View 1 (cartoon, one colour):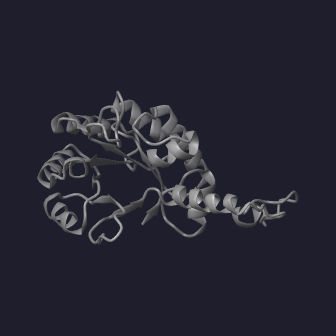
View 2 (cartoon, rainbow, N blue to C red):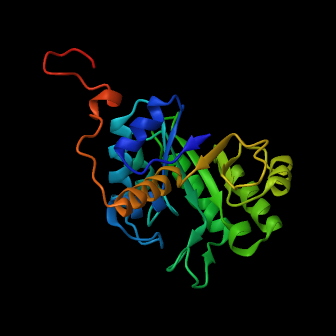
View 3 (cartoon, rainbow, N blue to C red):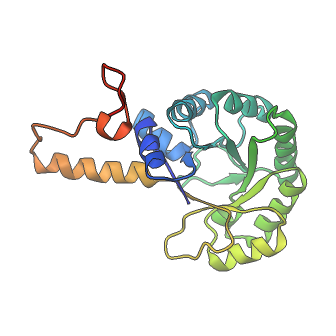
Length: 242
């Protein structure tokens, strides 16, 4: 179970509560960093900058969203490696207007597989994980196409495969036919049995938004708030841990 962070503070809290890993995706980055919706318009530089901020704030591994690998998946891998993250996922979803009502596009599967292969070859740290994500089931509800894509991406060297928005029945079929560990997004009401990693990608940003909305709607600002040092473990002026 990997909660999604929205910023360095939420990542620190996730770590403090004993989770072994933290996630930062394009959805949370678009919302928290720019106050916009996630339509696939974020640059590589923006995603890497947010991932670096979070990786620098925690000691647990960070999984980051690398979209479709941008223009050059090799440069993308090196940028995220330099940012200090432990893993990225690269998807086959592409084109303008992603996650909107506009027609959604997927790369040709062999082109996408070649990009995964290039990404794997480009990493310098053998412990840096590359996850191949297919949106075929999400976009077209085509499980067979999704499985065929993931099989090809696995052959290209992906460390894990990531079928988006699959339910329990579909997950079992993917697991049966693709010989790689599975990463999935939390799908409320569905079973996650058989997944190696479950991303709760919007966990922090949605809860922060809801809590702030409620607090502001109350129209009352507390005169005192709990010092951040109480739960971040900062040291006081004498150097003693609080």
